[in-house]
Image (cartoon, rainbow, N blue to C red; front, side):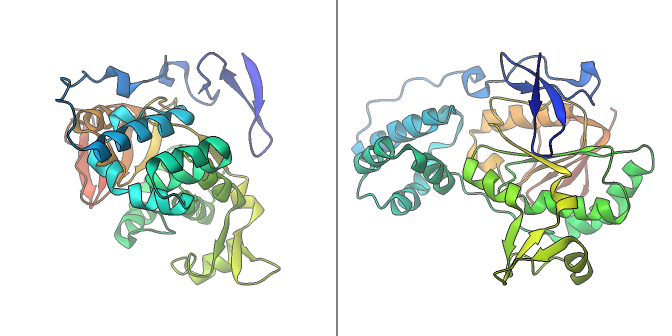
Length: 313
């Protein structure tokens, strides 16, 4: 085992072969025992006929190469969903074709994260979906923190962190920010860089209640932008991770996995729902997109639009 320093300077232990987090705050039985690889676990589809559309074949090859550059496997993703993002990916790279885009990325590897962000769009905002956060504020958070100290929250595909920061603000308001863990993971390094800075423009903070904006944000010297105060930023961890390759250890009280399942092939999404269900404590809550239904998770029951609680069956 080796000690690793995270953003706020505290030391936790990490098992080195798989770089899986094994937070000492979680019981040993709650930790993952091995790294996941859902893309490889899925039964391979029969080989299709040779593609008649050279563009489709080229795009599949391009995404396999692009994902491989960041240690990810594109096979678990819906081909049609990725292909819809091709124009945006080419625009952000100023590329005229996929072969041109690949040359650009080979010559300038720092742009790989930019291309990934254009392909896997991260959409989030402060207090996204008022009904969801009203339910969290009025019922879910108080019921969990009343039973013990600390709250364990995992935001998957956290993007710039606005959603996880929203939870942190609510916990700070009920004096429950200390003693737990708030973790945001994303496969896009540029998104995590923005999350760590915690800096947002005026439009991004319009949904933050004025009293919370005054209490927990600082206007930047240049003016116009707002940065989350150090107290809140220090309470949150950020980590690069691929949900198909690594399941975070522990039993979580609250997990956000919003509008992400649509990117995955149906069989992969079903496996993910089951894994996320098992990652929750009994009584823990999973927040998904309003149109998403974790049908393969048999211990989840809806308590609000896009909000599910794990129950004993």
